[in-house]
Image (cartoon, rainbow, N blue to C red; front, side, top):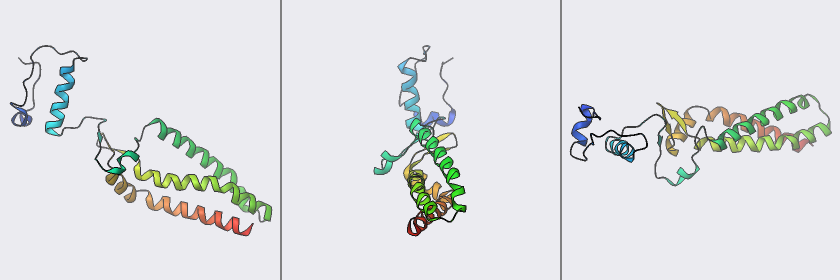
Length: 168
């Protein structure tokens, strides 16, 4: 009995393209990796955790959803939320000094949320256990899900900054 069994639906596509070795393969064997690559390239089969990418120029900006830089960005987002919560009581007071301080202190968080809005166009996402990294698909999904909410909040944020800086 052969060590490897090919699914019947794949047999027609891959038969004759290469020969399978009936010897025992170890996990570190290059034959196993080579076999997996050939099967994936010939059938288009994707495994859990694989990335779907394209050759567009924007691909270089795409970021993995669970990468270390993305985690650091999320932590920075928590700091921005904490900063927003700290500044919230200042809106209740109507002095010139409060308006000036509020407008100046509000600016870094507004810049962060604006950059976050743009970066979400390039943030990959999990789809059926694979990571979608094609910029067009990522942008389409973002436009269909959270973009309107993010745009509304960022616009309101900038309106508050402009109003506070013009009154101070």
